[in-house]
Amino acid sequence: MEYIVSARKYRPLSFDTVVGQAALTTTLKNAVKSGKLAHAYLFCGPRGVGKTTCARIFAKAINCQNPTAEGEACNECESCQSFNEQRSLNIFELDAASNNSVEHIKTLMEQTRIPPQLGRYKVFIIDEVHMLSTAAFNAFLKTLEEPPAHVIFILATTEKHKILPTILSRCQIYDFERMTIRNTIDHLKHVAEKEGIKYEEQALAVIAEKADGGMRDALSIFDQAASFCQGDITYDKVIEDLNVLDAENYFKIVDLSINNKVSEIMVLLNSVINKGFDGGLLIQGLAKHVRNVLMARDPQTLPLLEVSDQMRQRYEEQAKRCQIPFLYEALKLMNQCDINYRQSSNKRLLVELTLIQVAQITQPAEDGASAGRKPRRLKSLFKNLIQQSQPKKTTAPQVAAAEHAVSSPATNSTAKTGNTASKPTEPVGQTRTTSSPNPTTRSISGIGFSWNKLGQKGTPKKGGMQIIPGSINLPTGQDHTNNVQFSQTDLEFQWMSMCNRMPQKLSGIATRMKNMNPMITDFPAIEIMVDNDLIKQEIEDIKGSIIKTLQIYLHNDKLHIEIRVNEQKEVAKILSRREQYEEMAEKNPAVVKLQQAFDLELA
Image (spheres, helix red, strand yellow):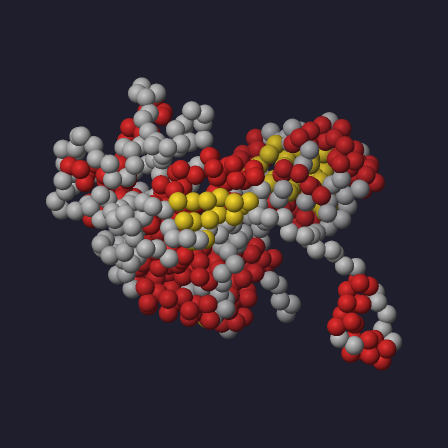
């Protein structure tokens, strides 16, 4: 006996046997019962959901001589029998993918003039109608709008957006739905019982998920699994046959993440990758799993789980162990990983880092710097460092010196508001007459320095020098000494640190200063070599601030700087290839012998 695949063998022959399109089939049956038929229909939707099948059933019901009270074909009259035996002369099926030219449409239009020999209508089913060319669509327009009374067109397509709007406006449009997993499982059960095949519901659920909403795909995969399993479709065999990642891995990862077992998650990830599965596939599947766990926490969202009854129970059990903040944060991390996966050059590391972060969501907060938790807030961190840098007992003059090193909050605020006049900052070590009421506590808003008047006309070059913004651990009046010896290495380090801290408006001169190499000539005198007078003038404008900054960080008040322009050196002549060869030959005669031995020519 000839073998017929399940997708053809169990193709629906009536509206009642169509799976997953109840509303649509009810509409078509009511149209047949009432006799209110349009002249053109458009069936659109994903692949394998029954568009062409419904078109054939509808065409047979239209021409049935004795339709049932429900609007179904009787399957007994001559019209129904001729259609079932594929010899009907009133129902034409055209594949627009291979008949998409103007000539094919013109031939079809000629056939519409001939009235039906048996039945009331001539029905033309045009499949994949979006494949018609623009010229063919235009040739089809007039006939589609005003066809003969005995003609009905049924168009089917998977890509409605490719059809001309003038065609869409002339048709009744029916949008077919994707098959749900539950409908697919129920239909596969029916087919398995008809074929006498044993099955596990969880295995059929895997097939339904793999089909992605297409019944034809589900039946094709079902035949494949039945051949592999030899009549006994089990979950393990289906997973092996379809090369699908076992959902058990997702349950294990979530349970391990709740318990912060990072090492075991890394071992599980390694085993999954060694089986040939992609890390991105694991992240996508895990994100879907966490979403299902989140849906299982609330009875209202429980129907959104398109899984088997056994899997739904497992989701509910795991949902009881997971807190909602953990699920939200895990979804956020995996979604970010999925976005960055394609652009990542080290995909495995990206997946590992994501799983580590997921495993640390429920980890208690730790105070250590290497705790692996979220970074501490910068404000509190700065406050702690400032408090640590302050001595336990500080006199008023020392506090004033420290305040000057960190700078006053009024420096930046007056520059923005203009309410008070900005005063030059006093040199480090100079005391103020006022003191802070609480010398051990500093406000974060006080960290900052003013460069607003730097380089402007009228800015005092002496006595009103600014220091370049630095780290929060500036030396205070207590530990400041005047004549500390510093090395060339210390000088280069502080020079580079100062360049990195310079404000944005001085980024140009800061970049040039990074390429300079200050040298200690006669301690504590420092010499800076520049390329031209223009750069020298730029550095001269901020020389006072540079000196003050280096004095503070190198702890030497006698430090001073001399700026000198490099002497112009003789420009070396650029030699041609011939001149380079002659120079090489003059220095090494063996080059000439090599050229003569191999009869080489200069390119």
